[in-house]
Image 1 (cartoon, rainbow, N blue to C red):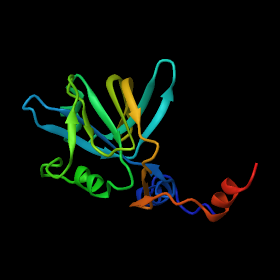
Image 2 (tube, rainbow, N blue to C red; image 1 turned 135 degrees about the horizontal axis):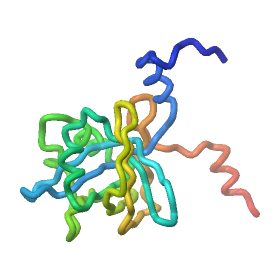
Image 3 (cartoon, rainbow, N blue to C red; image 1 turned 120 degrees about the vertical axis):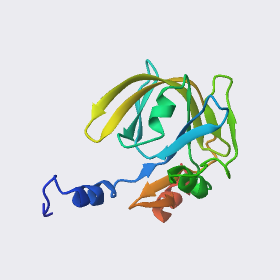
Image 4 (cartoon, one colour; image 1 turned 90 degrees about the horizontal axis):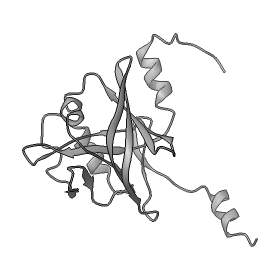
Length: 176
């Protein structure tokens, strides 16, 4: 192992961060004009079971986040492997990100994508500055999951699918 770059090298940081596979989720809500607003992100993590908290990281440069943070409820949809197009649409700029997506809004305005692997409604608990991002702590209100849906994964700057290794598949079939 060779350490070859200082941590101030943004390209080296991106390359290292890209080695860590992450799930992809949509964060969305219904705006006061009754149209959904949202974005894709891969910086989602569980924080606490009691109280039920998760966190996401949002770039300070995001033009969507100021709109979302002002709304009373947010929907988090964990994208499934069949939702590559949704991931691309939600990462796009300057267009209606929801034009080609199937979604529904909850009574409190959280927007959830159809065919997601999991979904949550939440509200903002806290927001902390974190360099060129904001660390946002979210309190979960409602949630659900479809264990039959494989998640979409972001790795090496590409959307990918999980594939079970042959050894793992063989060991799960072995008699117990």
